[in-house]
Image 1 (tube, rainbow, N blue to C red):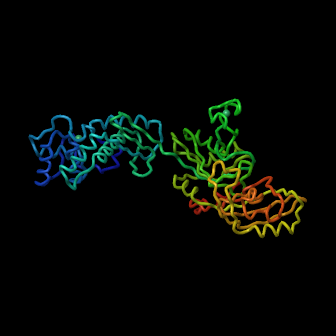
Image 2 (image 1 turned 90 degrees about the vertical axis):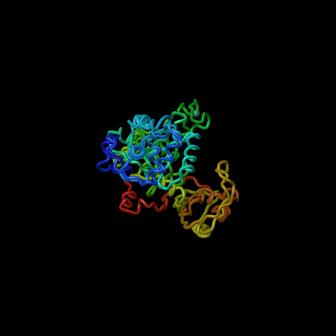
Image 3 (image 1 turned 120 degrees about the vertical axis):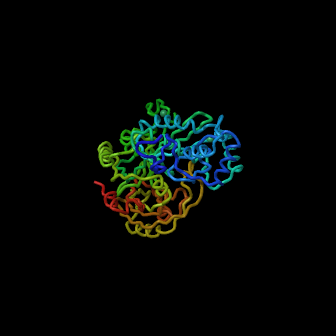
Amino acid sequence: MRCKKGPSYEKQAAGVRVKEKSVNVTYSEEQLDRARDILHAGPLCDECLGRAFARVGRGLTNSDRGQALRAALPGLGKTGVCWVCGDLFAQAERWAECAARQASELEFATYLFGVRLPARIEEMEVFFGQRFPGKEGESLKHAFNRVVGKAFEARLQRPATVAFVGPDLSFVVDPAADHLALHVASVFVYGRYRKLTRGIPQTKWPCRRCRGRGCVCCGFTGKQYPESVEEWIGTPLVEAAKAETVHLHGAGREDIDARMLGHGRPFVLEIVTPQGRTLELKALRETINTNAAGRVEVSELAFASRETVVHLKEERSAKRYRAWVEFDRPVTAQQLDQALGDLCGKIEQRTPIRVSHRRADKVRIRQLLDASGHVVGPRKATIELEGEGGLYIKELVSGDEGRTNPSLSGLLRMGAVVRALDVLEVRLDMPMERTDAVDKARTLP
Ligand SMILES: [Zn+2]
Ligand SMILES: [Zn+2]
């Protein structure tokens, strides 16, 4: 069987016609002796015989090679089930058919097959390699995956190529369980978001009471908060890609009650099990920004990869904040300036009380890079702070009962608390923003 578009594994060689069996390949005496030994060992399929000589001759399938060898060694015909693969290759077309059916509704450009060999076949394959060692062979798995792949391609009405790294679709054939598993790779979309309203969490939180099943407390939504940045951005993308769900991977997260302003926070939205992979990102951005107007806003979107998520999570970016602070005694501009000046530098911060239930209790050292402020009332000030990634700002101001040192409260010797907080900038160097995407990604209306 040949596919219309041409198999991506091997170039089809002129003059090799499988049906006529006029296979044009020459074997040496030594190779024929080896083939004779192999055939004497028991019934073997053409694929298994041929793959023992997979490097001999070009533009041939292993089946071609097997048939040619058999023709050259008359009287050593195949009788019975192949003792190595148990006639696994005879099922290749059926698996390909099954895969094509599963893929029929999916958009994809690349695929990969894998096979979970039954233990007995695995053992036989090892034994076969030991009994008839040679440098010209191809493993059973490799050969089978290719044969099924070619048969799969032949059934498609559109072009698709095998990809050994990061395929859109990956199939795993499990002959013992008579099951074909399909994994659809996620689509990743990069952007920056701004959160213009307080009270919106970054990601969807399941209701604490019912853990997402839906109860009276959450109005049967299963959610702790009615909205999230993840949903505002993700919903149009889920619909467009006919996907199962989305996961928002942010470069850190702001508190629920903090706004995210400036150029926004870098994120990658992972679209899980998408049926479609061609997304009109420009139009989708507009939809998101219209739907979430005044609440969430995204910059230019771009296709990304899982590596982008890793980069996003590994980088600890410096951030700039604005905080509205309230003191329990009056503060002069001079006192504030002095304290903020003294505050810059090394900060020792023990895991804050408010996150201690989900974070390990330890002392972290972070730098406060810059601090300035204005007194705006007798006991009120707005301050701007720039800190290394991981610095907790609310605690830097309050002192967190002595767990953060130094702190603004400690330096002023009075109580200080953050009443409102904005993240003004997330300083993260994203490779994808270094090209012409830079200005686009940083330009928010
Ligand atoms: Zn076989
Ligand atoms: Zn609930």
